[in-house]
Length: 195
Image (cartoon, rainbow, N blue to C red):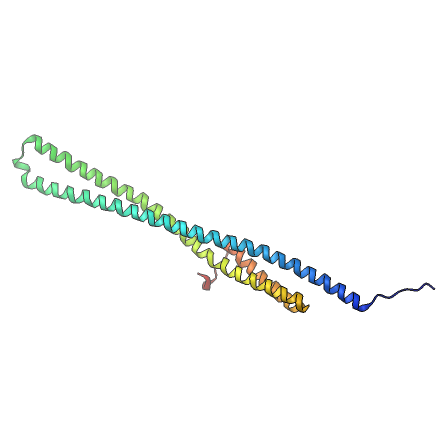
């Protein structure tokens, strides 16, 4: 009968441990990729939120300038109308016509600024809505990043301690972080404590 050499149980355990460590290391690399994507999403959300806030502020400043011009024309028109009522009968026809023409121009300018204001207000509100959307997204990325960083640490501990329990715990944490990161992009659900 041929000699059959039985494998050394210590070597088998070491090979199994190395294979497990490689799997955990590969999983950790996947965690790091998801972390990078979540970090990029968070940075972009913050940047877009700040840009939208700046655009909203610019639009509201422009709105205020138009509002001031509208009020200026309104005041001038009202002063001219009061003058016209007081002196209208004693005016020469040419001056009378000039007053009426100027009052009409003032009223037209007032109306033009009022119309322009509505477009500017619409743009400002649109920018505010965009800002608020990115503001709601940002915390999901922040929490996703934190959870993914914790999962990387837990996976590293799992390699060092050869603990499957810690590795499965890191999987749960990473899964939660991944869901939060995906939600940061898609906003499928809202968590009350995240705004």
